[in-house]
Length: 246
Image (cartoon, rainbow, N blue to C red):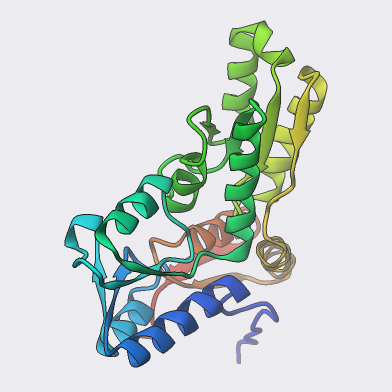
């Protein structure tokens, strides 16, 4: 009989649990509300929240004036908050505290006249939201793109830079990016903003993958966390991604 081992770190992280709880409480207290985008990348949880009266909307244009709006755990673009304020919407900010910290670091860099460099997936909601807190933000998917940008115009290496990472960034990608910044740049502030829970989960997944014949990653197909868990396990054993037991 096959031995099945469940990772100790399996499950939602603190930020996601907090966002879901806020959405549940708000839907019950208000008799309904709007979720701007998928509050988390898990269609089943979103469906459960919709059943409680938390309807999902995909843009600010779908929000009714004065409506209570849940901001998803990934955070939102600054202009979205400005538009919601114009509508008189009541915002319940369920942005993960770790993501909020990165937004604040980027906003601070902007105030100081520094250029924020963000290592992450350019089209991911979290990264797009973080970048919006400065008109100077530059996003890089990984160290190769970062190094190319710095070498294309050597004068960039002496600019005032602030570097942050997407909370779910693969540790290897971030560490390599940091090495490049330290090697080439003379005025770079570097902030390690990868979520500890994410790092621990990825590290445990790799340890298990090295010991097992098959890794089953359970999660939403649109989830960055899920995709990266699959990515870090694949070099070591057969790995498959599923959304439901069915």
